[in-house]
Every structure is written in C-alpha cells, then in structure tokens.
Image (cartoon, one colour):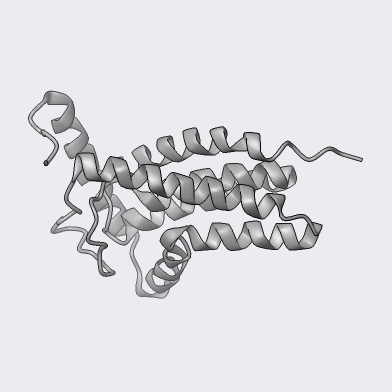
Length: 181
C-alpha cells in the first residue's frame, strides 16, 4: 500500500525533497560521480561495514567486533526491509536529478544504505572509539551518495539514519566499549 501524501506535512517534505535533490544534482560532475557511485556500492547489503568489522576483529584476534557489526548492520537491514514493505514509497523521478545508477526495485523509504551506515558506524565506533568521528562522516557520506545518485529522496535518508541510529545503539550491548589500558 502506498503511503498517503496528502497532508500539509507531506507536502512540505515533498517540497524539501525536491529542493535538496535539485541542489545535489548541481554538485554532479563526471570526475566525481563515478567515485560516489563506487563508494555507494560499498553500502550494498552493508558489505563494506561488515568487512570493516571483520578487519577490526582480525586485527584484535577477537571475533566480537566482527559479530557485533554484522548483527548491527544486517539486523538493521532486516528491520529496514520490514518498514519498506509497510511504506512502499517510489524512488525519485526528478527531472532536475535523473538517476545516475540503476535504482533498486525495493521501496525507497527508508534508505537501507543510510540505516546500515548509521548502525555500522555506531557498532564500529564502539569497537574503535578513536574512529567514531570518521565513521560518522563516512555514514553521512553514504547517505548523501544516495541522494547525489538520484535513487533516494533526502527524507528517505533522514529516516534511514534515524532507524539505523536506534538499531545501532541497541546493538552496542553486544560490544562493550574498549577499555583504555
């Protein structure tokens, strides 16, 4: 079932989405669009985040970070999929911001890439506290990449971040903060 879009709030969100999609399209350039598409691809199914968790686990000779990140990221993907089934929002079809890559066939809302990036950055930040800021920046870049490429409305990304932040914080119980020696 398609979500109702007739309320004043929905109209305001739609207007903001259109404005931000157009603004992101103004930042496109062939020299960077390919890099952004490649970076975005690392977020497919959360593989990039899970690989980073695995590398931390290998470096520490402890599987706990790898397991915690995988549970956070793929648990978020499962929850996100359920929300997508309920909302069933169409992908952007914006004249000023055509899609630069093939859009997934799933519902646009919420963004799985943004949700998994938020959850992954939280779980990895728990394992490597010194990397929290760069991880959050990477998560924000992942969400932006989806808008830049024209496959998500900005509000899809915001909702994905919110969902991923909640699931990421819930997953922290799996991995206590690293103690400083």
